[in-house]
Image (cartoon, rainbow, N blue to C red; front, side):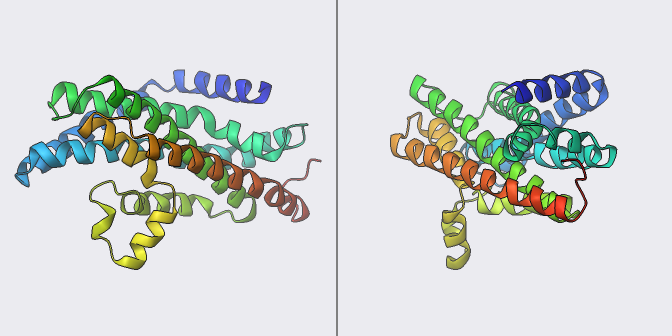
Length: 256
């Protein structure tokens, strides 16, 4: 927990020195809502499509933090600071999770901004109820944890392959498809739909969508989401140690 607190505080201080970047993030939140609001009007299905896609845009906004985590970690490998963290007592999985925690939390805040702009400014036709808002909150936390697991797995890959950044960018292309962001998974070809159903990315989107469009708290979906979060984090944690051991054998992490 000490390492997590230190890394979050470090990233918070860095963010405070980068006001233009924060302003661009806020502008991107507004533009995201603008683009899909007018796309919904163009499709002449504004009342149905905009709330549907608004739920999916949350996970896309959170995923925007993943390339940031990879970029900052690559820089820390270059300057040796990540090696210092790896030489301490913390397990590799804890180091990787701590590296991504702040950016993913920041992504969740921006995702909330997308929802607020979509509903408050553009009048998305959502059902605002207490159970529905609880479902949205749970879905946002679940999406953040699943994508934190993804960033952890990609950091493990970064220890083995220096091209993990490209994989992270590619995941941003696949996520809207496999997460059911812009359309239901049922319209995908059967093999691709099966892959999407196995992967966890659609689960938080489904929970958020149920909360926004139906105003319900989907108990079964939330239970599935809890299992998906636990499984994703566990798999990512398992990948961390062998990846770091490989990097040390290859001389990429010289400190022991």
